[in-house]
Image (tube, rainbow over all chains, first blue to last red; front, side):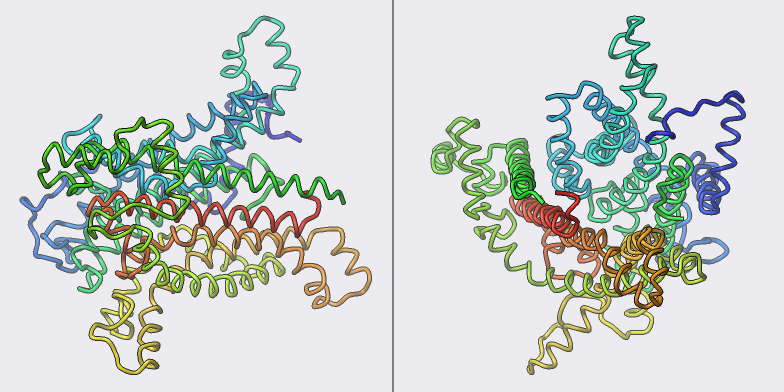
Length: 310
Length: 328
């Protein structure tokens, strides 16, 4: 029933990790995904080192919508900015939003699922009814109507924790609307875990409910959370790209979706400027595919019997 | 089979659907009250026109804004929503939101229906075949391609299609639903519409095909390892008989559920694609509402998306219960 929940390893944690990695990397897809991710994370960590500071309309150097050349490897946009520069800086913004949104989503989903499963009764019923709503309503649809209203309340100026307000709002809204899937899985795992003897033992020695949840149940949930976390990132990137494409992003901190939105408004498609809209799109595609591949490989490694995709 | 259990099962599904829709409406109510500025002022010109205090007070009374938020205004709001009164647009002054949505809905339905139809036929057939011949070259290649399609935003596929087929080769139009100027004969007009449909439909269908292939393939490869398939082979059935009599029908169960679910998300999924092609549907309306901060329209769209999602979820649940008696 839950052979995947407790992984007692007599070989010690280091070897367990090694064995896990070997198993994970035996999936061709996971290998490709990891290499691709490491590349993009590297790019996102040091955009200034790689391509210099983010270009603006003021300090742009190229021609308007110039095709790729030795000077501008990925061509230029409609105000002469280097597309490579924009895409590299976009990596940092897109990945940060997606990863932070995922952290929020995992935190909320894990807390709600664990509390619902652990306490049961009416707490469970009400929390899961709430989860049902967010499970049915996609993050994109909720964010589409919540984001502009929250932005209207907060104003679009200034910044919050280094983010432009629209990006901050988008990442919080994505995080707060995409946790239901995680909550369901965590709840069902918690239901089976709380019947185990080691939980009874902790209760007998006087551990509080909070400490049982955090110290005994949570560590056993890590596999499920990790596998689903990767899929949450993929969907967060998708939602962020779509929202930014519809104009909810911020041109001062352009994510890949915002770049696509700018390209669309500049008529890049009808001008045949394939490099301008191709570059951010390929980035979105590679990163979300990587996370899907890694998520599936993690899922397969932890639950060998439940295969979704080979 | 137990009749009482079945009707209780159906009752639960209905109640869940109603509760979800109610939450959508309540969220709409809260969001509208959160927007800064006096709603009475907003009604008198979106806050841009100056109005006298008496005018504002008259508006407040006229719209019941002087009454308590809870429960009076909420109840009013909900009953108006049920009657189909979604308020007035800011941008298209004086027009009912419901009228605007109904006006734009047909274009979206045409786009989504054609794309879904193509995706269901192509995706399910390819996926079933890949699952039946699991591990073959077509299976491996097809799965990678489907994952790729599934991970690619449809609207970006649309942009690339415009660059290639519209800008570079000039084969198909990449903008709008009809050529400007209009055509005289109705046959020409239909052909013109179909040509405009080609690229947005392809963009939307490709992503859906990826999804249907993955699900149909997984369903079929689950079925082929079942005991009854071994029995069928032992009985001496041919491959074709096994596929038709046993595998296909059983594998369709999760696929039908996914189709029912997807139909609800289809309108939402088309929003960004419509934005690329300036398609005159709900997506186009959403983008206009976002740009003009036309909140009543945005909320109307949200209600429409919510309703279509809830209805399709309900249908999927009911269909699952009908097709698989074990669920009841």
